[in-house]
Structures are given as C-alpha cells and as structure tokens.
Length: 131
Length: 287
Image (tube, rainbow over all chains, first blue to last red; front, top):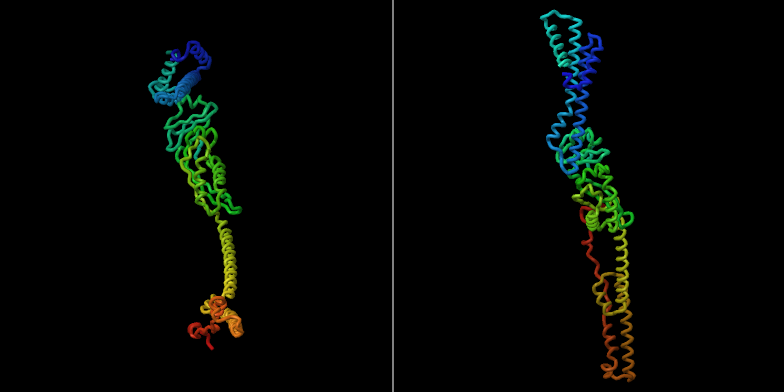
C-alpha cells in the first residue's frame, strides 16, 4: 500500500527509517509515520481544493453570479475529511501499540483470541508495508 | 437599528429580517436571501468580521425641546421616524448601527429651524412646518426614511408663564375699560349739564340722589333766568320799546328759550320698600 500512496523515494525513506528502529517498536513507528504522512497529504490536498473553491467563487461573484450548490456541498464535505484521517491514523497507531504489547509481552498461545488479534494486526501492517 | 456582530464565519444562512454582512481587509460582502460563503471564501476571503444587519422597519423616537419665537417659551416636539436599511454593506462600513448618531443632529437642527418662526399659540402651523422640513431630512444613503411624524406642543413649563401673561393682560384691559367708562360718564354728565332738555329727560329716569341734587340746582338757575327774561320782556313792552306783534317776527328765539325752561323742579325719588332688602329668615342673627 505504501508504494501506491507515496512516491518511490518517499516510500523507500519511510522503510529505511522504520527498519532503523529496534524491533519491538517498529510496528507502532510505522503506523504513526504512515498516519502522519497521510494526514499531511490530505490536509495539503484539501487546502489546494479550498483555494480553488475560493478562486471559482470569487470569479463567479465578480460576474454577479453565485457558487453552485454542488460547490457548497463539496466544500462542506472536504472541509472535515482531515478529521476522519486523523482519527483513522490514531486508531491504527493504537492498534500497532496493542499488537506489540501482545506479540512481545503477552506472547499468547496459538488458537487464543489474542493470538488471532496479533495475527490480524500484523497482516494489516504487512499489507500496508509491502503491497 | 440593529447591527449585531456574528460569532464566526459559520453564520446561519438565514435569519428573518436580517442580512449577513461579511467584512474583512479584502472587502465587504452582503449575503442576502439566505446566501452564505463557500469554504474557500471563508478560509481565503479574508473576512474576519460578520454582522447581522436589521433590514426590517425600524423606528426612532426623539423628544426635542427647542425655543419658539417668543424668548423663554419653548416647544416640546416629539419626532417619530420609521426607516429601513437599503445598503447593509454601507451600514457596516460606516458603523451606522446607532440611530441616535445617525438621526439625532439632523433631526434636531431641522425641528429647531422649523419651529423657531412660530409662537406657541401657532402649534398647528409649527407642526406643519416640521412635517415639511422632514422632506429635506438627509441622513445617509444607506438608510431610507419611510415615514416621519411629529407632535408639537407648548412646553409644560411655559404654560404657567403664559397664563400669568394672559392674566396681566386681562387686568390691564379691565383697567383701561374702567378708565374709558369713567371718562365717558364724566363727558356725559358735563354734556347733560349744558343741555336743559337732555337734563330734564335724564332727571326723570335717574335715581341717583347726588345727581338729582345737581339737576335741581341747574333747573333752579334756569328758572331764575326765565323770570329775568319775563321781567325784561314786560319792561320792554311797558316802555313801548317793542310791540306785541314784533314778538313773532323779531324775538322768536327769545320766546322759545323762555318756553323751553317752563318746567317745574324735580322731586326726590321715592325710597325703596324696606321689606325687599330685609335679610332672609335663615341668616337672621338673634337679638
């Protein structure tokens, strides 16, 4: 997933940065860095759309027009997207921390709920890391 | 006139009787009919102040005390204006939220100029002048005056003063009338004393004892004159100076003067009956 949402040099840099961190903290560090990166990207993109919205609205009003209802609706939706991104990133980081506590601290036996939780989170993080 | 500052850029899009005005370094924009700013305008538009401007019909009442034409006597004028906002952006730009600051000085000047030509007894004309003067009221193009009414009356403190002046005037007029009557009466008495016929007629109707005394004295004097004239005529006839037939042609005025005085002395008037001036039984004092 990292290769799809980040340019190659940035994905490589993130991978190198995370691999330099000692193993018990690698998952949480990766989750935090990935969340921060996605948040920044979403925020900057939203800012760009916001300025485009302002330019279009100003252009319309100077011609004695008014922005369309679609523009109002889209602006109101995009304005709050970064909040959801921040929430998802926080949840991902907390899940990574929980995974590390379970995998390296509790070390549950195979077949228990905690073992399945550890496996699920690890699979999801590896999906984000490699795919 | 309401001019409320809004809390933030996320104002309600519509509020009955109000228009939202967004102001900032880049300009002032009026958002009428439920319009609002887009997200981009809120962020990059530079609007940092938002206002509700009341575009309904507002009223403004002012009580003005201004002097009338008479020094020291004032008019109490109550002015009622109804107005509405035509340019909300201009109201925000120039801070025209206070009707007193907007209308106070022009209304006071107009009213003072209009009523200063009238006295308080011309209140109706003063009111008419005030109503006409309101047609020239120029406050600000952002505000349209719909109606202007006025109530003009004399100052309450001036009413006792006016009453005192009126009472003094009435008193003076009464004194002058009394003086005129006294003078006319004196002139009438003097004319009567010089005219025997009028004197006689007046003596028959008058009941004034002093006046009757004066009349009797005058008549007695006239009677003595008549006796002297008769004696003179007898002497002239006896001495053959004039003939009896000359009386008709040559001494007619003398005869008429003598006959005009052939009246007896005037008797005193009868006393009024005592019973008519007696006190009523209820007010009689005990002996």
